[in-house]
Image 1 (cartoon, rainbow, N blue to C red):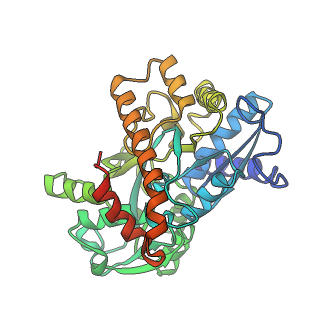
Image 2 (image 1 turned 90 degrees about the horizontal axis):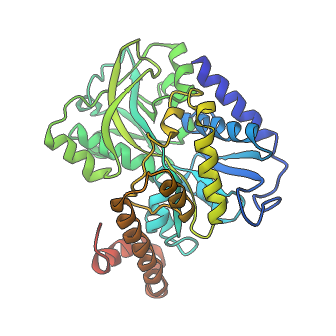
Length: 375
């Protein structure tokens, strides 16, 4: 816990020391890694934030660059600064997929399919936590529970849908509580929620553990039916083990959803800039790998290097090739995804002119099924 809180405090100092800077554009170099790293991510107290703080701080300590972290609880809040040029990278939830595909709130006249790319792709575990005294012992026991539905965050809500499906449940079987991601721990304390969802190592979870005993629900049943239920709703996720989280004793583990929480940018970002950022992450790995429980997953050997839903940036591909981490399979999938993105953006131009503006998401989904093959 002390390691987690120390990293968050450090990240807060990194972020607040540069809040006077108006945008990522000021001070950027024409080529190479921007002089000021401006990255968006989830809010204070999350392990996602702690990771970003640790990685950016390690880079700035070893270079002349500075860093600023912009936090947001919503998908649009994390993607917006990147789109507006106020940030040069974002560490997101699955909204990077939805932005690429123009799904959910990205199916709008203001957004549409975005030409985003992966710059670095670490993975992280996620799970459901309850009070240790709770009668909820399994996913099936979630029936009737006060269950979080995260405001403006389809990335998390799709994972929650998958977790309900694992227990044979739907949203109709629980009492949804509309709440922001960062408000969940206080809601469990007050009894507003019976369960919360987070990446497993958030600092706020250790603070919650200090208030009363907590435990994780575990996806121990790996029957084909349950795995298929998860995959149908969260195709980006795998079921896997995690240990050392809040509420876990030495040697104890649980099983939750494991998936990529990448650092992303736009395709037109400087190739040399993205390449140098990837190189800086790699070069400074030993300096930050032990900063949090999940920064170890930022290593080249631990991170994903084969794209599944969004292509890698050319700068990252160059780095991966130089480090013998780019396969023929990855290259083929990357090209296929780049081609899909081109078709999405081209198709959107004709689609948006005739679509009903109050039903864009549903009509766009129908258009994609009719005009694009799935990968």
